[in-house]
Length: 374
Image (cartoon, rainbow, N blue to C red; front, side, top):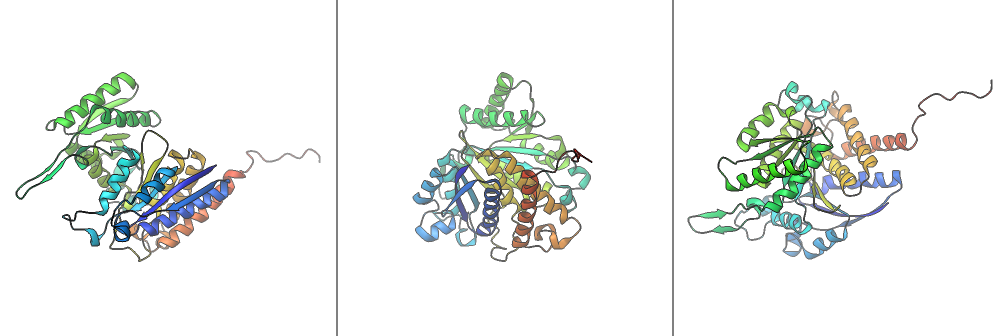
């Protein structure tokens, strides 16, 4: 197949880890006979420095031409003044809204080799395989904002339609997984959460009675996510709560450097990015873990290009690299206590990927060949 991919490396470690993800996508294209065209564009602080806008029109046009968008990270100390009228994060929020990607998927499935590197006890982490579905274009991040000398206002607003569409995504995902959805809100206090609970319940009863639905208040969910994470399958929540809970869930995997994300809308085009942010304190040192970006590329293959076999091949390659580093710190990323830098991890993933592609395209026969003659 042929596909166009917009590449927005962004700020901090974004360019470093996105280079690794692009290398993996190029290897997939070569190995499976696809043609991927990559178009680079600016976003965030890099875009502000170059042209004064965190989301230039040329970048938005490149994303709208593309079949999928791969993004690194935005932000850094140079643009950290919260009073600044133009900030890198504005570019990311505007891009999500412009592309109509309202459902953010963040899978959390700790690899056995990383359990010892989490702050959580390994026995609590065994069997954890959850998917957080975060509503991405509503709530207080996009509501009316007001600032006066002695007060500030951020309006949290949700419509029935906004809740319905993201709820459908969560329930459909649950049907293909273990059939359970936990909807997170603050319905004992917030009116938007009461609407969230009512709409989610109605969508469940009307369209997905075969899926098990439970509701949790966000404060208790923050506790349960650490105390018994294996109890959850799909976790559905609004924008602000989801932003916080997914960073908390990163602790289950051992590092934020391992977790990818996919932001999806009504069509097939999606926005794919690691959840770890720009990490300016390690930018330019060659030690950033590229695995989250590489796994984001795998989500791109699966959700935007429908290349499920190729996505599984990338994920299997990452799993082999993590397994190889379990007892050898020289093969383990720095954020997991090892000494392997960005380039070394990328080379290891590419080597495992090439071997996996060869096995996938030329599998061993299921039974030994039987000679027809003596």
